[in-house]
Image (tube, rainbow, N blue to C red):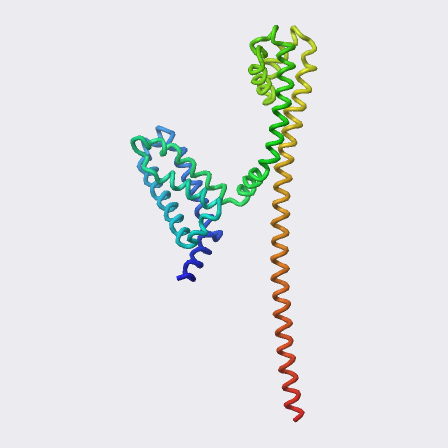
Length: 270
């Protein structure tokens, strides 16, 4: 029984089966998107419903088989729990008060994160970067607060629609940080009355947009690099252990062979 479970677990985690699941996820995502079109639904709605039920059935069967193969160990992996929740939500009947669950079937697409190693690496890097990113957010809030106080004091009288109070100032600064119409919509109209307003906007954009964003990216990239180096070290350690085990096995075989040769020589001398 244990051997069968082990073989089943190896099959479920094999690249061929995972590629099959990835293909189903992509197909299901495409069909769910096509269901938003009245034309496609009027002509092929029955086919979409049929495909959706089959794919959901395969996903549910996959989870059941994994629970059978891995037992309680299945829930030791956060990614397995993520998979389980996504499939469980999708399996809730989409009728009556639960009709909203039919809309969020698109969440099944998120299973690609777990099944595609590169995507999983990015998400894991983001999660591990949260403490450092949190401090970046603290720094950004301080920058926003300082510039919002300055902007309110400098421009609230002439431009109350943008800098009337500290709340409006922070919202305007957020728009400026995203670079959405900040020049044509805010900066240039203000510069018609206050020509030196650019002395306020340029430092803010440099600090809030470029510097902070680059630090954020650097933290995530550095975390990804550390995770990659850790994986490489683990692979090298595993390889060295395998090599050492093979070396010891070879030594043992040589020693056995030498003993046999010694016995054979002694027998011939007699």
